[in-house]
Amino acid sequence: MKIGIVCYPTFGGSGVVATELGKALAKEGHQIHFITYRQPTRLDFFSENLFYHEVDIKSYPLFEHAPYELALASKMVNVVKYEQLDLLHVHYAIPHASAAYMAKQILKERGIYIPVVTTLHGTDITLVGKDPSYEPVVTFSINQSDGVTAVSEDLRKATVEHFEIKRDIRVIPNFIDLERFKKQKKEHFKLAICPHGEKLIVHTSNFRKVKRVEDVIRVFYEVRKQIPAKLLLVGDGPERDKMERLCRDLGTCDDIRFLGKLEAVEEVLSVADLFMMPSEKESFGLAALEAMACEVPILTSNAGGIPELNIDGQTGFVCNVGDITTMTTKALEILKDENLPGFKERALKRAKEFDVTNILPLYESYYRETIESTKFYFEKI
Image (cartoon, one colour):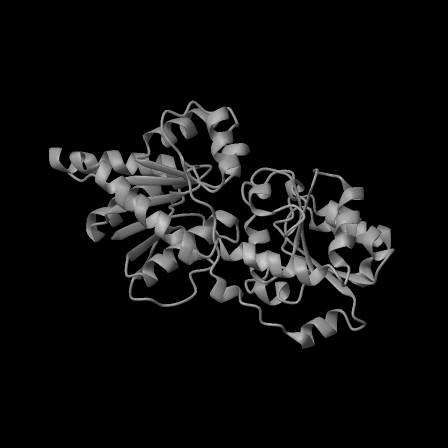
């Protein structure tokens, strides 16, 4: 198949999943065309089946904000037409699904029908999409897609509850490439961070309020009172300055390191003892899955689709959002020397269920199903 993938080319979960999906499809022999305004962060190797088409966004004095959606739709039209794509797969509803609808109508006028699959990732539905400024367009775009997937059952339910959806939504969970996350202990790194055998806790996010990084720091503060421990915070964002001030106020600066954005996050995860994700909104929890793939147990909130991934008491623990006391207790339980090996083993076992080799066939099957179900349009043209 020749497939066009449209996504945000950033460190965000939707962009990471879209890029990794494209790379995996290319390895299986499919021809993959990425259509974005910048080369995706994870599109980091050459393949004869991978292509990148940059969306050229013109800036004119007339426009206060460049009309990205129009430029994107035009690029989709050109790529579909000249590369003879079989299907467009757009990730994140805004503005990709609406731009795909526009492109589809333009192509239809030119005698070309292109099926569109839209994947919903989370905040495009639970946060941005519910805003009255966008809701009508989000609803329309989802209903006009030829196929729609969501990364968790919780997200599927939220979409149906908050929007007037007239079509089925298929749940296809996020995934990881276990080959990339195979445990590769870098003992020299662990020794540099934890020279006296301290337990190592890790958190990665984009440092927005919804990620509740403050909860991570406060739990660590309580844990450190009882056992020697270190905390690594990976990522960057609007809350970082506030979090650095909190560390100074709590007197924990010597035991906390802010590492900023890292592409090779697996190098950090591979030496961690515990991963924390206390988010108040999370459609799936891709970062937690990446930690589990590195044999790291996870301590999470019960928000969104996280409980579908984290098996309470087995791969880690699930706590109520903001419950610092319980999170502290559960963190200490996981970090006990007699408990940690079992949690690590079960975390990796669970992660294997989400290996790309298990999830990729679900997308391939859905693509074929979507193309087959829209064939009559080709016959009419």
